Length: 132
Image 1 (tube, rainbow, N blue to C red):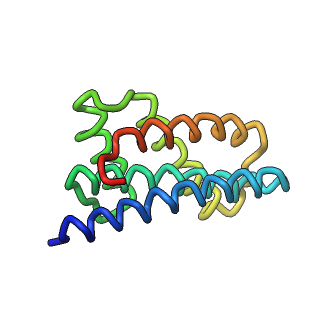
Image 2: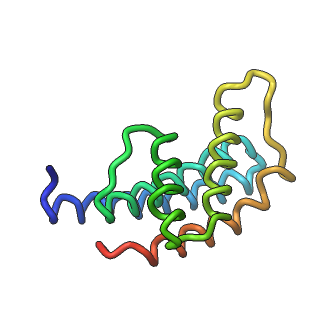
């Protein structure tokens, strides 16, 4: 069981990792590395989602579990719009394809629109976090 101070520190660290991953996504996108940009966009969303869940006392053991719990506990309760759940799921699929499918290479057209959507996700989810 985490103490309040430990939980606060982990939440803060995950928020920082989310923004760092987002910065990495924009940097590699500028270089035209779209599969890697998609990967980093996914991780930005993942870290922020896991920060929010931990902030609310919810812990997931897997990436799929994080997506599921965000949908069930946060989106299901009306705290967050369903479009953010779809975004998280789609970025997970994009990351899986980019990391594990031999013949997949993401394109600018696929990835670039997600940059602004991830930015909105990060801001919205961070606003729901009480441990800052």
